[in-house]
Length: 101
Image 1 (spheres, rainbow, N blue to C red):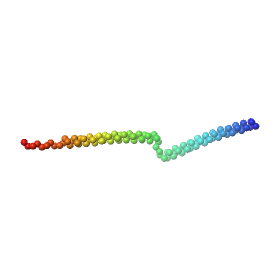
Image 2 (cartoon, helix red, strand yellow):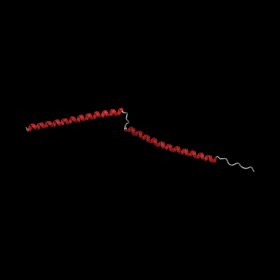
Image 3 (tube, rainbow, N blue to C red):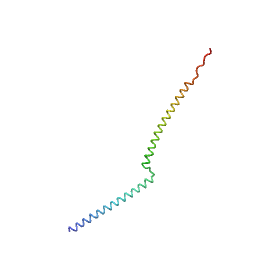
């Protein structure tokens, strides 16, 4: 009887090991199927990849900084034009007419 129960336990252990192997295989296949479905779904959604997003974000930040610098340059030029106009008005006044002697 001990021999029969030992063999029975060996068979049960073998079945459990085989079942675990089958379960792992099924899990891997399910993961692969889900992953491929998700990749297909995401590619159909026309989403942007992270690297592309970061590159465009950096370009926008550089353009914004350049815009601020150009705005400051433009304001400086406007201020200079205004000061030149003011200086021109003060120097272009005609001198008072001389009285006849």
